[in-house]
Image (cartoon, rainbow, N blue to C red; front, top):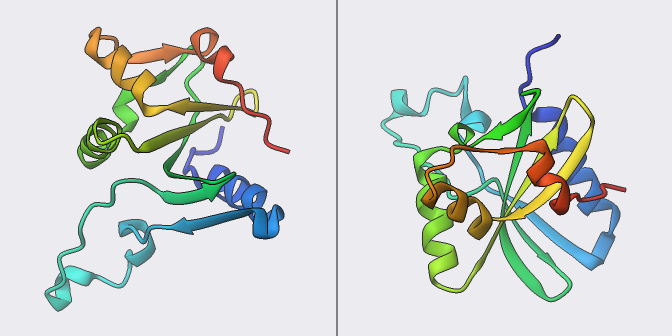
Length: 143
């Protein structure tokens, strides 16, 4: 099996929102993966961690969006989140904002749309993952 880089999932996510034209506005945050090979530290540039992959406006609402692809056979492990993403999920939801995680199970080509508060609630119960069965109620149909 090829290594799961997440790039095909991000591309599918972007293509979906782009296909809606003016009905959606998707903006990708620049992250370290975009500047790899440019060696920003070499030029004295400290590249900050970003709170999410994207900012999305659709149907009158704006959300931070994180796209995660997963090839785990049984569950989506929360270890896929970086510290900055955990902080952003907590701060955005505490301030009444919207933070959504779009999870792509690459084994089944299934997508899930999960609000950060759900992940935070599981984490607060000391659960470190969500089974694919638990995620079924969050199924998102990527057209």
